Image (tube, rainbow, N blue to C red; front, top):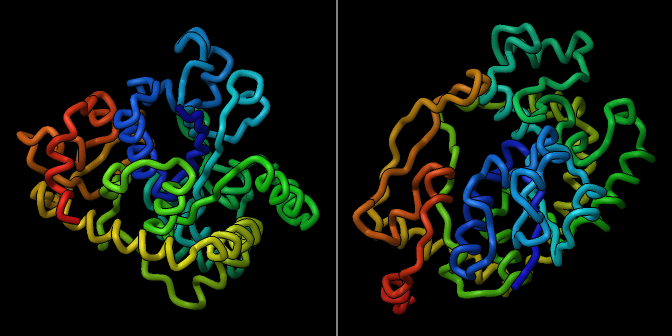
Amino acid sequence: MVKLTFEKLHKVSGSTLFSLLVRLAYFNNWYVDHNPESLALGEERQNSYKSIMGDISLLDIVVQHTRWNRSFLESNYKSDFSITILRDPVDTFESVFHYVDMQKFYNVSSFQEFIRRLEFANVTDSLSTGPYGRAYGRNQHSWSLGLNKEYYENKTAVSQLISKMESNFDLVLITEYFDESIALLRTLLGGPIPHYLFQNENERLEETKYSLSKKDRTTLQNWLKTDMMVYKHFLKKFLSKVSPEIQKLAQQLRKLNKQLENYCQMKKKRKMKNFVNNFEKKHIILRNNDRSNLYCSHYGTPTKEMIRAAVKNFEEVKRLFSKG
């Protein structure tokens, strides 16, 4: 039995990792709530969490999907491991900008206009806030991990944030190396390799992504320098852990994920995704699959639907992957 906390940041492949963790919970009979809205400890829910869930200490996986609150977790839940995942801050911001329609927040007509404004004018450090304590904008990784915006230009404060993260998290994963990240996660949690398979969730259509020039990227890196400092530190540390053994396991995961996609006849199709209060509204990729197959029905479906579907029959899993 393992006790795990996961700080789920925004637009870092967190939904894919979250779904994988929930599948691990089912595979291992870990105790996890079936309602992702209460499982993800939004800021507004933390004080009333016990009245929603009962004793939080009974859970094997706790996911915090808002600002990291170590003191709350330590006073209510003792975990064996804590993890989070980071993504290149420039790509994170580009994704967030389009995913939550931040043109309105920054009063611009396009992402290109926003970048030009960065070059010639000051842009607010304030974050765009949404339901359940969500916040998006400049240096949102650092803010979500506990750094207030008045310290964005303070290198000492950023270094202290990094040190705090070093002590708080047993593993900081990297989106750009997702297969290697999952391979490292397996070394932490153990278990059969097939339990760590995944398909991407909340993936945007290619035509909705803004193509950044080298100049654009440099402009954004300078504006997001606090997040860049945090990201570069943990990227370097992460890469030092990617041994030949981890690379081999990551390659094996890529092969098995491709088998999974072919076996389950997964197909990509367009979907307009709408969230509460129309705060988020954007075309994403939805993977359809063979829902008549119990194993396949657990993949390629919306997160909430997947969480409610406990899979107990693993004989098909063994047959599928017995040949490697």
